[in-house]
Amino acid sequence: METVVSGIRSTGNLHLGNYFGAVRNFLKMQKENRCFFFIADYHALTTHPKPDDLHGNIKQVLAEYLACGIDPETATVFIQSDVPEVTELYLLLNMNAYVGELERTASFKEKIRKHPDNINAGLLTYPVLMAADIIIHKATKVPVGKDQEQHLEMTRRFARRFNMIYGVEYFPEPDAYNFGKELIKIPGLDGSGKMGKSEGNGVFLADTPQVIRKKVMSAVTDAGPSEMNQEPSEPVKNLFSLMKVVSDPAAVNYFTEKHADCTIRYGDLKKQLAEDIIKVTEPIRERITAILADNRYMARVVAEGAEKARESASATVREVREIIGYRNFA
Image (cartoon, rainbow, N blue to C red; front, side, top):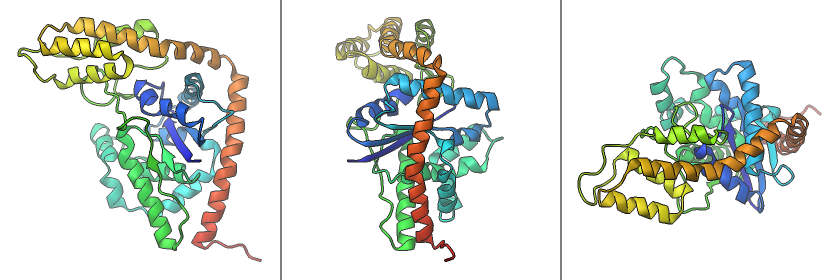
C-alpha cells in the first residue's frame, strides 16, 4: 500500500484546476492507499490574509474537499496548522536547504515578478515547507498538478540529502501520481496560462451556473482562423484543453473540425463548454452548501483528522531528532 500526501492552499475557493489537477486523483487514490489530504493554511500566510478571511477560507476549502467526495472515514483529512510537528521538520530541513537553489525555483521567480512588494522568506522557503508536509508522513506518492512538478523534485532532493548527510535510508523519495499519461494542467480563461485563484481567470466549484456562463462567454479568443487547418492561437488552445477535460470527445471533435475548416463560431464553442462545466460543478456546489451549514460535522472531521495526522507526524519527528543527534539526558 502506498502512502499518499497532498494538500491545497486555503486561499479561496477551489477551481477546476484544483479539481482536475489534484482532487479528482484524491478520490481514486483514497480507496487503495493510506492517504493524508490537508488544507495548507500555513502556506496561505505568504499572501498575508486577514484573520477572518483565513478562517473562512479554511472552512470553505474543507467543505469543498468533502463535497468533492473525499471520505474522512477512509482518508486522513486535516488542517496543516493542527499538526505543529510539521513546523519543526520544516526548520530542520531548512538547515540543509540553500538560498541559491530556492531562488532558482520557477514559482519563486514568478511570484517576485508579479508581487515585487511582497518578497518574503515564506515564499523563498515554500518548497521546504512543502517537502516537510510530504515526507513527515513518509509519502511515496503525491498527486500534484503539472505546475508543482519542480517543487516535488525539490522534495525528493531534500529527502535524498537528509538520507545522505546522516547516512540513513529514512525518507523515501516520493513520485508524482496521476491516472493519466501526463500531469494535468488546467488553463485559465484569460489565455495567459494556468487557472489560478488570484489571477481572475478561474471557474470555481462553488460558482453558480449563471456565473459560469458569464465567465466562459467572456473568455479570451481571437478573430478566428483565416486558413484551412490553421494552428489555434494560445487562448483558443486553452479553451480546447478545457473542453477535452469536461466535454464528450464528440463535442471536442466537432469544434476541432469546425476550426480546421474555418467555420467555427466561438460563441457556440463557449456555450457548449459552459454547459459541460456546469454538469461537473453543479452537484458539487449543492453539496458544498449543505456541508457549510453543518459546523458540528466539519469540527468532528478536522479533530479526528488532526489526531491521526499528529500520530504519524510525531513519530517521524521523534525519529528524525534521534537521527540528527538530539538525545535525552538519562
